[in-house]
Length: 91
Image (cartoon, rainbow, N blue to C red; front, side, top):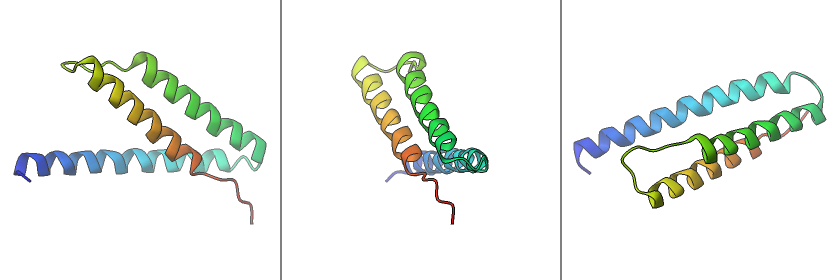
């Protein structure tokens, strides 16, 4: 891997970790509501709104249509994977 590609991978990984940490804190605050139905509805709303925003508002400059469709699909899948990994467990 070239040093430029290595640097790009490091930036990508750092960005992903930062976003996951922010999301974890947001979800933790939602969890503190103490109500499972409310928690699940907030998570579902976050997922739906994020995917809608990706689908309708995301514009990638300098890319062809196929790349844009692929990036939007992968981003939407990433959102779903992250948000559906949270469960409401009161022990």
